[in-house]
Length: 215
Image: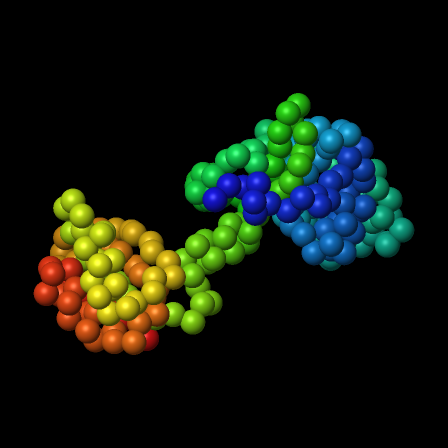
């Protein structure tokens, strides 16, 4: 799955010359956390709700509302924005985008193409929704977790065992987990099947330890 299929195209942006108060109002009204900073459509920075809260005066200040608004209007986005922006393109995979967000500890990525032009934005929420969809979360299906042996044809053998009981697989995910003190490859299958007990017994006989079953 590519970022271009999951990104939000109706990107709300802000000018580097805009005052902080206007940006705070945008974030509050649009219920967003990231504002790409653009000159035209060209990306020049990014500002987040955290950046804005960091520079906003303390609620305990003795300044009047008029004085506060004056100060916030004087402070420009270009003075608080992050200039070195981590970006992706529409052709970036969702997995790559997820790794960038995790490794850089950020909440969103502007999506750019030719000339650093902003064409979308993808956030941690968008990526989480994509992974939930891929994993079949929310579908009416049972969940089966088993140890997948590192041998040729193991994946196919598991699928054949499920097929024997007329099972319909909704999604498959592989990961690493500890089984009997050893890190092993595990397979998590979401499926619809009438005889789950039969499937489990068949897999165990074929040498695939079943770790958990949720019907």
